Amino acid sequence: MEQIITIGELAELLNTEEILNQNGVSLDDKVEVKISNRTLSVRSLSEEERAKKIAALTREIFDERREVFVELAKGHQ
Image (cartoon, rainbow, N blue to C red; front, side, top):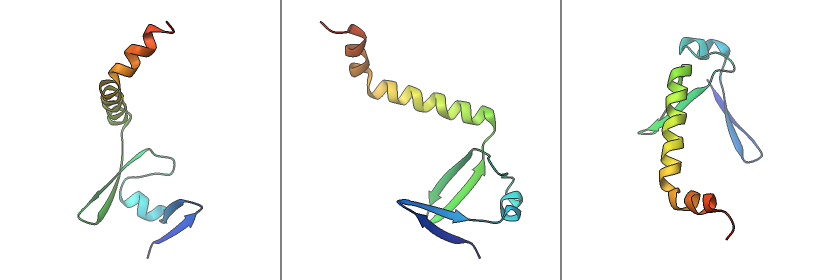
C-alpha cells in the first residue's frame, strides 16, 4: 500500500524502489505524470522525449506571449 503525505503545500506519493523499478522508473529520473479518469500514471522520459516536450512548451509560450516579447525587444523608447 502506497501513502500520500504532505510537506507544506506539496503532496508526495511514497513508493518503494521496487514499485518504481517495475515501471522502469529509477531514482532521480525525469518523469511524465498524467491523470485520466481518476487514474494517475507515471512514466520515465528519455532525454529525447524530454527535449521534445521542452521545445514544444517553449514554442507554445513564445506563441502565446509573442506581443509581449516584441515589445520587450524594442526596448525603452
